[in-house]
Length: 211
Ligand code: SF4
Image: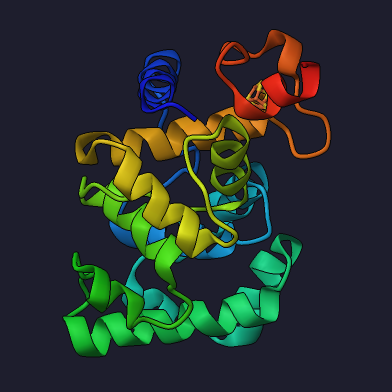
């Protein structure tokens, strides 16, 4: 893709999804962290249903550090991989209490040292809670950025590096949310709605398909 077209697509994405933001509900950085861990292989909608009950009773690292795994599993079983997620959330909460004085750390390396927190989760927390530029590559970002042609790569790490190179750092977080929303509502995995897509004039996938 020509650099001019790529840059134009990034500008358009940020314009169309100007107000894009995280669709998970949370009232603190720690709640966000728990919600992001729960969102792996699960929809934000489902996570919001689950956390609306869970956070009424438990919402601090200390609460979760003292929780029995079976009790947490009872709340989150509909999120998928609930045993692992419960184990990780409790370990993560214990780490935050013991190693970070009960405060979610704001550095990427420290975040990634917590149980259940990988590159993607750390980047979502950095971008959303700490307003640090970050591009988290989830399934939507991976698919949509490659279809559009604004990133190349065979795996999330390569796509993240490609986006970090191609997108102005000040737009990293916004572009991430724009790609998530576009993937969720228009550029769907099985049936992308190309005819109504506002970016089809420049989209690499669409232009290859129609020509
Ligand atoms: S034109 Fe189609 S493939 Fe390209 S971004 Fe839009 S929906 Fe996705």
